[in-house]
Image 1: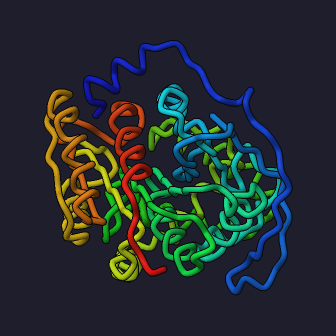
Image 2: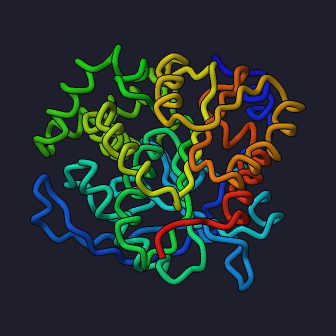
Length: 337
């Protein structure tokens, strides 16, 4: 069920960031054992790329998802002088190639790291990885990977509407269907695909209610549904607790149509950081300086529950999120020299 703010946004004229796309070739390790070398042509969007920015944010989309997941935040990034690099996943309509990938987390992380290296993210002054939905756990995992090498300028990771430790309602009620579809997709038979792709197009756009370009993209979005980290996120979170110089922020909505509030709350409480409950716009504005103060006091883990919001906080609270990102960049980080 859409929230009041989400309904209002639906009435706005459609727009996207497609005209801003740039293209780069990315070579990464793929396959269940990462024993294949794959090169894809990947489109991305680079906003506010200029000298003197406060920091750089790399966004990771959900599944399905694209650079347009963050389109409602574009103006906020430019207004607050923060660079935003929006990425796309192999198999999406904005990446040529990668349709035969395994879509495991290790493989997805291999791709993201290779793309970030190609785009020179290791040379920026301050870096935050931000993910929405399925991309949230990818942001968490990338924080673990990049923070192992202190030559990466990583100072934070942000998870928006990320699933919890158990299969969320978006897939738990459809797991049998998802497994069957994934099996058929992996056969890679043209005769089956000719029937399957239109069915997948209907499945996502009409049954699940998520906008997907076509059946091929739907197929690429189905496979990552089998490879969620879920409970394994605890391992990544425990690892990040050993690295206080990387600040974490997790935000979720109580009215999320995909993720139960109790599942989101369980993940938030596992961080054992400062937690904020936000009921309305006024409280969100009041929470911003408090969150800045949390980071200034040395608290590395902050979470926020928006009680009246759903699955798209980057759409309904873009200014709040950009203010949090700005605070993460501006507060002096502390870590091993």
